[in-house]
Image (cartoon, one colour):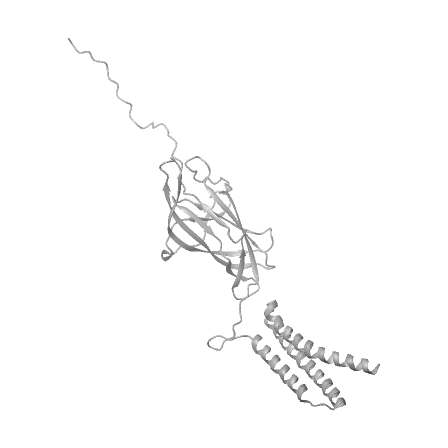
Length: 312
């Protein structure tokens, strides 16, 4: 029975030599692997080092006790202890937060804490007399400025909005975009930039009435600023995107923007979630319908001539 206990004690000591450093290294690596915040990263890191050192001390004490009983040389035990210390120090050095030029610690001081769902559906402009926010696509070079949304509404608040129609008589196509705030509080000063690409229209001579996109002559970002977006699905911010130009236009969404929570002082990055990472809005050139012909009542009547006979 005594021999069996002695073997078990030796197995426990050897397992401690392996488990202690391994657990300590795992705890130190946890902040990097799980992307923990600064506070939890510090707790886990220093906790891992403490567990590693305590386990090392216990195993060294047990090993020395066993070695005294067997009256053997302490050299192997000391070598194992030094090796474990070197291993633990190297692991701490490797997982310690790195520094950049200037001695600043490379920590993101503005983590993305809020998300906005950006949904766009193809359709037409609304006829409602209420206020409508709209982005009208025009090829304005970035050096000439530009940005924001326009507002359209009925002056009397009752009359329906009448929009231009295409040459075929259909309503001008537009995308209805809806921004939903999934943060628990109101976001104010929401800012982001849409990516606009303008291409020339090339008429197809072989097929009258048809055309295709040509070379790209303008690519720019269009900044948009929204005063506020209240939380919950029932309070989205809605605006429309429409093309009244004779060009092909492609609009794509950004990945991030900036906003300030109403309970905070500073603006922070926000994540913008689109339908998918390849989502784009495509607009064809706009050609307005021809005005309907009407009778001109102001024109003078055509003169009437009597038939004349030529004498023989």
